Amino acid sequence: MKLSDFDFDLPEALIATRPARPRSASRLLVARASTLEDAHMRDLPAYLRPGDRLVLNDTKVIPARLTGQRSRATAQGETRARIEVTLLEPAPGGLWRALVKPLKKFKTGEEVVFSAGLTARLVAREGGAAVLEFNLAGEDFDAALNAAGAMPLPPYIAAKRPADARDFEDYQTVWARRAGAVAAPTASLHFDDALLGALAAMGVGFTHVTLHVGAGTFLPVKTDDISDHKMHAERGEITAAAAAEINATRARGGRIIPVGTTALRLIETAAGPDGRLRAWKGATDIFITPGYRFRATNALITNFHLPKSTLMMLVSALMGPARIREIYAHAIAERYRFFSYGDASLLLP
Image (cartoon, rainbow, N blue to C red):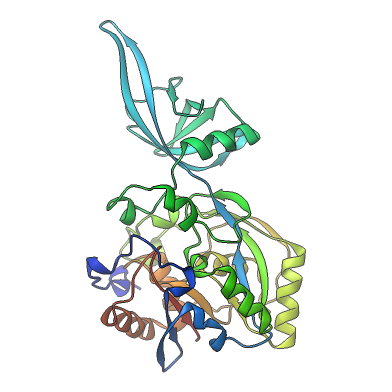
């Protein structure tokens, strides 16, 4: 298929820059094979059944965006320059891969100084990214990063406004537990304690898995033939207990419903041809496009995605390309809010 098959016109005004408050007040488009229904996230219990299981990504977003100063001695004296760093992922030996602006002027061995006593030294360059060594590690690094860093908002929000104190709460799920993501599993941002309680009371189960969302989730597809696209890899884990919960639900006839494309990609990576999951840990670069046969997924809760993105290809695989075009046309006509801080859909193929 061609990249243009996943394009659509989205009015700029529908790109959300702040989430709904409370979280469960966001809108929910319930899409079945032949019907569409407008609702809100707080109505989700009406569309699920006792015995269904939601799969939740418990990754925690780190405040990965840092701004510091690089100093350099010259014949004219010391010069200072602003350096912007966005952490991407840990590297072996306690190092970090990061995007640095401007990387060309940052020399190997030079140091950048951030606030909260945090500094980093450029160790190497790898494929357009920097490899940094920080002066702190462990809990000391975490504390300094929390003090010095900002939440790494997606480019389409960061272009409209800077991250602020509200984003430390808004861009984090209520069940975030395992630090390591540089982007939020955004479908999960619609859940609050009241909604979780209502779902539990009606007999919906929850299973936590971990996929650390990387900045690669925002990379555009640049190949006209989508089969030529190289998918970014992300680190994750499904415990033996989590796999057993999902397998038991399937055996009882309950539906497996990932909350977000990250949870979906993880369970599809770990599922065998018969749909049974096993304990799994590693990096996945699974690329789901139309024609894919879903092994473990029965439905999906997800936000509305960017045109020509790999996530548009994933939801097109789940619902069918023609059907997903109808769903998105309805969402635009009814002025649903799009992308990370936008509204949600429940896709029931």
